[in-house]
Figure 1 (cartoon, one colour):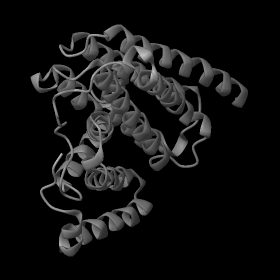
Figure 2 (cartoon, helix red, strand yellow):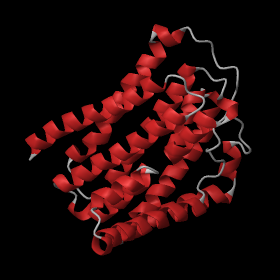
Figure 3 (tube, helix red, strand yellow):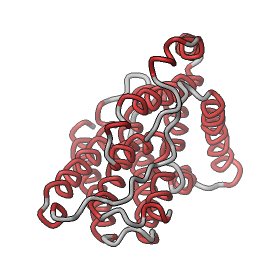
Length: 285
């Protein structure tokens, strides 16, 4: 993956310092207006992706690109790697690792969202995502070192995932995503109050498309009172929606042959997360 502008050049220009200063300003504003916490969070993730793009991607393997791309949109990573012809010659090991790393990035971002958008949330509410993240780590180790995959030849296609950016913070993307969160908060209230549908149903439907957005919406709405079984239920609904959608994409993807392994890993990790979290939650209550 090639960079249009060297990192050292960025630091000589005013734009990176301007972006960092504006980001710091949003953190100060969010301290007084908690509803706006989503803006500096999204900006920070953009800045992280920018530095990761420059510091890691030149030396990265295909799967590391999947991780960095998954931080921006795991769904987009799945759609690209599973269906585009330029990835059709990538071997099964690389494809599986790329998908697992993209899921890891999504789960890690969910942990950041809970941390930034809630006040004094108990550690038990991090467990659904943290446990599934641990399961993904085990799956990555299995695919990386299992003799079944070790004999596969490296991919002959130097394919790149087209998600990473060469600009510190793309404020248009920050504004669009932040606006989406606020719209989702309003929409979920409307669905519950006017249409009579449960919050769980609306949460599940949106989580099929993008788990990050709906989790940020839920935590924005619940941030001040993030306790109780209702919130935990919504967190698992989000994980269920993400698991279902990514399994569906894997099942219909043209480039992946070992669909059953990926789908089984997704649902088994969800079940383990549900079981362990329920046990901890019961003890916590």
